[in-house]
Image (cartoon, rainbow, N blue to C red; front, side, top):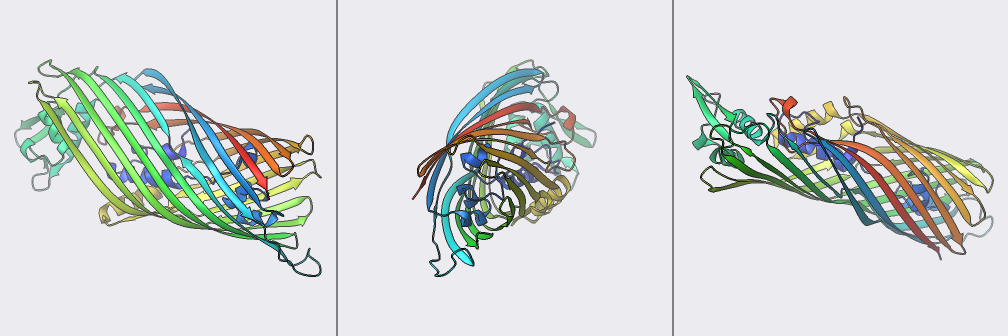
Length: 495
């Protein structure tokens, strides 16, 4: 199957608890960023470590800033269309969503060293750049429906109740001692029933199979960086760069599951809403170091490192269950879980090589490496820390992305571009494949440039509104195939 990196949900990681699973998934979601690029590099398939001379260097390999021979400004707006096809409990549904956004905005200031003598030897120039980039985009909407088969809300809350046991008796708490507000609402609303048998007790679902479920997701926000980078030119042969990034996270997810069916005992109909919301705010810092070497005029070699992003994150999770009991009394309960933690994303290592064909164009190849098993998570909750640390190391692995791009100049003013990128799997035991196909065109007129890029990628996402840990085979999964088409336009001006 194909899986989108940042869409892995709680059931996949197989954590002991839903809290551990949720934050293990978030650790990957917030680590799976890709530095933004201008439409020129977008048409080439993404970041290219060895090219330089483009504002994309501001966000990727800062050594590329050293290749600028004049100051330059660029602005890249973009449009993303997501088309979803979902299969859920045997039924199919479709949805689509389009969004406008700002991919990046930046400026580089060229500063020659003004030395006397041979200006082609030693330190030729020092260039400084500052820019904003959006490097992860979460916006998406999904809506799908299906019919349950022993996997409705009654089964889910009975499972939760049976797993919340009194340590003195090793039996589930009786109804008047239930600790979870939503489990209590499920009991009060007759979704679940309490059973006693000799010296044992247990909860069971009080709902029939064949209930109608409608699920909707609404996700917003993204991750962004404000980058400050410095690139130096030595003898027009060697380029060295440094960068500082100020990172931020702004993410909100809202989810609603409506289930309508009949009570298993009294044949009374029920209508239940199970809603969740998740708000995340975070800030962090990272550093970049890069170098580009021109051993000969036709070849460029590039290498860059990006340190882990050191995040401080605040979460607020809210869930609510609302239904009417058989006497038509409204039963509503909620849980709220504020939580703060620190997250360190993996180190990124990038390498690349470019071959130039005179003044007619070039071919560029890139390789990017990350080890997602090295993600660091820390909070004040020791039990949560241990569970997430264990899940990260047992779920994630090293990942390698490979990109290939080419540019051909039709005239001195017009260039055509194409690219391909293969994304490796960050998972140890899940078959992950993702491929991106890109194309673009560029036009230069005087001191101005205008570039257009189109990128297409297909992903498959598994998601669930609730996970039954004791009986995962009955957990209702939604399999969503998403086609993402992104169009970006970059306007650039030299000054």
